[in-house]
Image 1 (tube, rainbow, N blue to C red):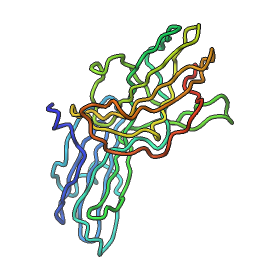
Image 2 (image 1 turned 135 degrees about the vertical axis):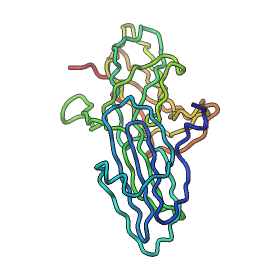
Image 3 (image 1 turned 180 degrees about the horizontal axis):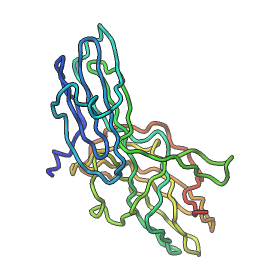
Image 4 (image 1 turned 90 degrees about the vertical axis):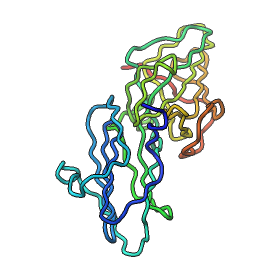
Length: 263
């Protein structure tokens, strides 16, 4: 697939009575413009590895209902909206990624792994813009990350292959890729079974290849602690990329619980 053909985001104009369909990995989204209202259908499949892509294909108005998708209706007699803007967004919670194969970082070494996280689809009506909805493109599970049930936060769970080379990362339209550098200055190996990725504090970028990327994350292990690390975000260093979205919130400073072993 050509690089430009992977860019599913952007603006579209719809005529009254027109319905367009987007297939983005496991998600299918229909948007229909009717008189005095817009109707949105979203169907979410269970295959997290789906890489199907269809961008704004015209279809019959009654097709989404025939497939069982639940409609979301947005009414406004005088809105004047004629266009639609699709934008990818990162999740509004941090993501805890579990490598398919756990590994350890050797003493005095550092490694960069590439971790995937789910994308949300933001839909806005134009001109305006007027926010219509934000939809997950992947069915994400909830998980708790912290030292105890009282000390931690609710996150989304993700499985990842933790590739060591970006060129080995498989492209999908519904995931963003984060480069996570792990530094281990301690005198013992650092086991990695789960990685905390604070995606709400990361910016989102579109690489010229069509792959969605985020700002990079650097963790430096704190002494011999197997979970705590010093954390900072690296915004620069994404060549041939265009920024699509700013962070949802500002990053904190100091120590974070970056890793956790499975209990």
